[in-house]
Amino acid sequence: MILEILSIGLIVSACLALFQDEVHYAVGALAGTFLFISLIYALNGAIYGAVFQFAVGIGTLTVLFLSGEMLSEKTKNKTSPKKIAALITGGTVLSLPAIFIPITGTPTETSATALGEALWELRGMDIILQSIIVLTISLGIFIVLHGRKKKRGAN
Amino acid sequence: MNFIILSIILLIIGIYGLLTNRNLIKVFISLELIAIAATMNFVLFVVDQGLGEALLIIAFSTDTAVSAVILAVLVILSKKYGITDIDKIPKLIRKKEAINIEEEKQDEVVEE
Image 1 (cartoon, each protein chain N blue to C red):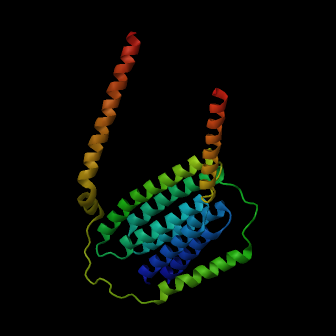
Image 2: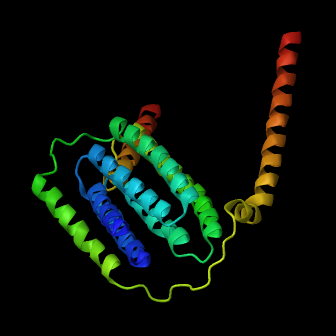
Image 3: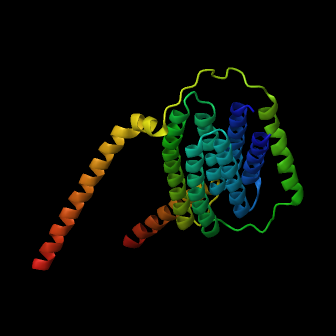
């Protein structure tokens, strides 16, 4: 029951985020979308996924809120309560198929690789190589800049 | 609860928003919704939970890169032209090009 409510909330907040006129309220609705999807992940046992989604969502919202405040043109037209009610109703109706259509072809056998192990297998080596390259480049830049500074000091 | 249908609905909402909204911030929100719709399948419809979460984390890095590009475009547009509307951008660019051509012609006339 909780998952169904969360999925309705997810779709409704997504509709509100897209079709509200004011950017601030749209960003607020997007915050709801991130919160609902994080809760859905957490309830499905993907705690790390939920935490990462929430963290990335907070960062995105901060940037969006600041850019919306500083860069966008401010509209005088406010979204009417009728439109908000229509969006909420539309979102609820849209989320109904996800609740009532039964699941088919669900995998029966599941395996459980640890997140750390999976990340190491997928990205371990290339992250290490990237970090070695970045470290080498930064050390090189430091040495070059230090040499220039010494030359200027000598002159 | 059918998460594939939920993901498809979210994807449709995102694509509809992407096609109908002209504000760049709304376009950004649409892309975020599409990214959520795509990445939720890694976690909710996967055989291996750890692998799904690892793929989700990798997908976040791609998503963040896309967000950075869109924000850069937004900042450049609002600084250079003072707008965030996608439809107005080509007209403004053409106007600016026309003004530049006229200025070059006037300079040539003055030099002659």
